[in-house]
Length: 504
Image (cartoon, rainbow, N blue to C red; front, side, top):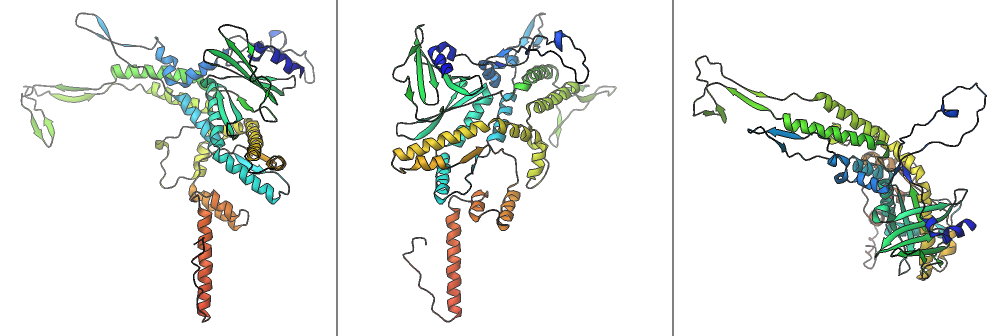
């Protein structure tokens, strides 16, 4: 509490955050005393504190790298230009538009797809759940989908992989409904997290500007605080918000910090763009072929079968016609291909184009999974890193939903029952699959008794929203027909159709 009180008493301390870094321009000594050495097995050396400095990268730089229109190559004056010599001996520049390649966006989309392509997987961990707990679990999942929490999760992942960090703030709207909103740097919010000496979260601070005023919103386990600054004044406490209970039992802001999606290959991408633009300059200047025609020809040419025929009328008949193609810069093309592969390996993504697949019919999902092993490995690692986010989102939404149901008098005991409901949440990574193979797997699991019919209906790719009702109707009709056939076979009159049956 003393650390938290000290933070709240010094608003400037709330604005301190761990910087994002990339690379280092200072040599790092190896071994003690700055030189490499050797030591015998079992020997000891004097411990040293870390001595490694890295360059600070602003989050604005991340956003510039993500936007192709802001890439450095577009403003690089070292890219060769094309000039033409005029008759008077002067030179004129030929217009050439430099091009940026949106590798960063492609890498971002691939990582978000494999991490968020499937809904969050919820598991009810109660050892012997009662019927009420099972119903509450279904209610939780229904509201989760209706409030688009899966979509908010995807937006948060996209924001974090775009600018380094992101936050998802849970709150109650004016109607008392549990909602969430995204807070990210690209929307003008700077997230500053503060931990105690053990690494446990003390408070989350959000720094932003609105209406020419600067704000710091602080969230602790129970309370919310706000500081305001305007016209160069010092920070002042907002009495209308300061010390107000936010309505949750833990900090309602879910935050995640990490590297941007392309962080490890940014240098490769920049070099690739430079070489690519130089290649385009060369192709535009020297890459056009020339139709070379030699000889003496009549003014009128013959046209046969749609082709123009030129007859050489020179005395020695040495006429010739050929297309002179420029030499292909094959080495540069191979270099670009090699760099593209290196970018994919370094970023942990795989770009599969239609030309890379030459199979007919339904491509095996297993074959594509093997081809995209880089994406799968990256997504599995990311799912572990995002586990705390999934767990906290589920906790906050479960508690907020219970309070909402009580406030709206839909369920007066929801808070107590929901608290006893033990839900675990985790990311389920997306992999390409064959629908036919997937549906066949569901049929086999249903036949083996591992899956219920209801789960098989919900999980298969062809079900409609009312598929269960359709199955029940067809089953009922089949039973009624079987009874009618049995009655006819026994010589009894068939039962009259119930016109008042609401299920018909």
